Amino acid sequence: MNDEIKQLNEKVDFLTEQVLSLTSRLKSVDDFKEDMSLFAKDAFDEVVTFMNDVDFHFRSEDFLCLIKKSFRNIRNFTKLLDQLQSFVEFVEDLSPLAKEIFNDITDKIYELEKKGTLESIRRTVGIIDNLSENFEPEDVTNFGNAMVIFLGIAKKLALPENLDKIQNIVDDIDKYEYDNSKKVSLFKLFKKIRNQEVLKGADMALDYAKIASKYYTKNK
Image (cartoon, rainbow, N blue to C red; front, side, top):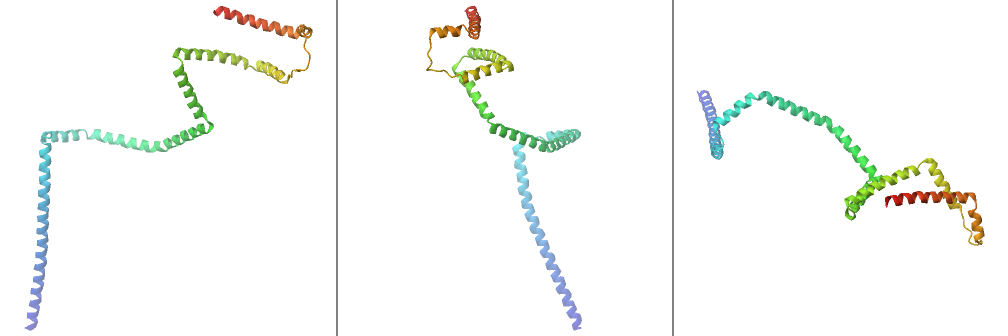
């Protein structure tokens, strides 16, 4: 009899524990429901406030129209996404090449800077600015035309046969040493003038002077 009473008490204690556990869970559920109800109320209030703000601009029929258009243009959206993906892949493929081109350009600029080419360009621009500030555009044009003529003359002088002649003349002049101690007389000068080479040189100089005089008087 005592054993039966003991077992009955154990069952009652067990049932009591189960009831308390269930009650605790129900309380937790009630607390959760209360919290959710507060959250839902705040969320609903926010939605209502938002709808009131956009009510002037938003209409349900506009939303339905947007959904319809979205479904109608799914194929276009898919194509757009495919194109976007292709563009992303193109950029990814182009990035190494663009980086290499950028590095080459940077190296070339550094090389030009090292050689002084950029400094020469800057100085050339400075010369052009100086010309623009001090001369009229017509004067600059005339300078350009004259430069073309001078370059044509320089081109003729730069021919190998002419360069050789000029070099020989310069060498002879450089080697020549005038003796200040020697006596000079008219007789000696006349004697030099009678020399065929001197006469040919004088005759050539007079021809050049005649040609120059002709063009000068013509332009006058």
